[in-house]
Each structure stands twice: as C-alpha cells, then as structure tokens.
Length: 253
Image (cartoon, rainbow, N blue to C red; front, side, top):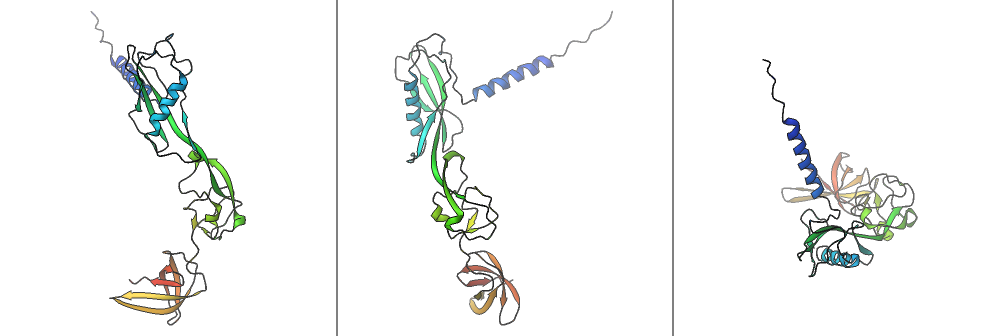
C-alpha cells in the first residue's frame, strides 16, 4: 500500500496573511470609505453639509489660515449614499499621523443607521516667492536685477523660502544657483564680514589676555566662517573666524 504525504497547508496560510495585510492597507487609506451603515440606495446626506463639517473640524486642528490660504476637502467618493442620520453628526480628527498642512477628519453618525467616513482636508494656497532671475555663481552679491517675484503653490515651496525679493538683495549666493530656483535662507549668506586683501584686526585670547594685531584677509569671510589671514607683523599665515566687520578671531591650538 502506497503512502501519500499530506498536502502542505502553507499556501492557505500565505493567502490568509495576504488577505489580512491587504485589509490593513485598505483601512489605513485616507480616502473616504463608508462604514457598515452606508447603504446603497439610502437617503443621501447633503454633500455641502459634510464638507462644512469636515472644514470646521479641520480648522480646530490646524494653525490659523493666512490671507492667501484656504482649505480643500475630499474628495468624497462619488455616488456615496449615506443614511439620514437623524441627529448631529460627530466630526473630529481621525487616528493617525497629521501634519501642519493636512488632517484626516472622521465624520460619524450614531443614529439608528450608524455610519462613518474619513475625509482628508489640507491647506492649500499661494504666496509670493523670490526666485533667481538668472543663473548665479557662488559668491555673487545679489542685486534687484538678480531676483524676480512669482506666485507659487504654498504646499510646494521648500523650507526657508523668501517671500520678498528685497530680503535677498545684498545677500551672497552660498553656492551656484540655477535660473528659476526658489531662493531660501540656506542658499544665501549675509554680506561678508571681511573681504580678500582687506586689512583686518586679528584678535587672540590666551589665558584671559587679549592680544590684537594687524592682518590681511586672504579670502572673503562671512560672520562665524573660517578664513585664512596673514599676520602682518610676523608674515605667518594663520586661520581664524570672522566675528564682525574687519575682525578675525585667531584659533589657538
């Protein structure tokens, strides 16, 4: 009599795990999904009422909107029909990660035919922003001709963007900047504290004693930036930190 090994049950286990994982992914979606009480053919809730409730709940969670900001709601699934609630609909933040520009609102009915849906709400808007009018090489001190203003989507701007071209004028490009680049605090530096070839005051503190001498900057240096200088008394090349206009602090070992 031949013996047949029992069939493996692993495929069934794998299928069950896949189904559980898929269900978890679906439950995490921020798109609108009806609960068990959302029945096809039921009396439809007024969409404008749902939108107003979602906006009101989101405003309680988000920072106050600026003059150029607004909220966008949804989308609410087209054709979704929800039973008339018969009582006030609860609106509050849904569990999960929210940001300073987006929140997911849960609208919940606890009436005779309960249901709940999740509605994404985010801050959108436009703001003026300063851009490079043309390509800039590192070290360029910006003038009004180097900057122009455009209106951009607020949610697509990098951190530290400049909303006024006047702020950029007089600052220095910290690195090469391509034409059309949004100007940020990270791309620009203040006016150099010392410039190459300039006579500067070298300051060295040792044991509570401050020594000052004359030197010559061998490169431009911004505030708190390292710069090499020549000691005019000894002729030695030393490194210091530009602390203020025409002043370099020597770094002692």
